[in-house]
Image (tube, rainbow, N blue to C red; front, side, top):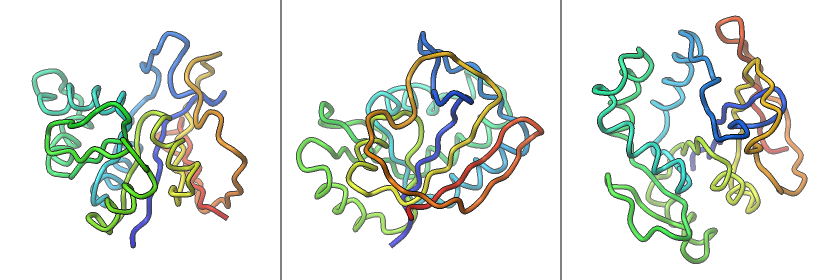
Length: 186
């Protein structure tokens, strides 16, 4: 069975978005983009919470008409072809071929998804799905990209999660500004 990894961009003070929901601060340079594309290419499926899913589903299907950023143009075909799983208590279906789990017993439903997608799963974006999965011990690795910004508030990475012991397995600097901290469950 593959690894379930949570990939997240965060500020130095531990927030994934600013006090007003802003996510305009991550800088996707060439090195970070190449790393992120490689991570996405290795995933058998992407896992999103409802809120992030709605943002992704509104952006990536038509990204070429919205953005000309090299990272966006490289990631779009990967997003389109990679299976998607949405963790939500409120959605019955999600579109774009996504599988929805979380309406009942999340641990059981996620185990069924793991049988269907036995390779690596990449949980990205927000905190809701990642926190719910981590609370059940279902996240194997944390890929935290720290950006050089202090937001002073907003949405916290993994809020209200009980203590978990991790071990550092990799650090890496990108584009002279961002740092990867990759941890595995201890």
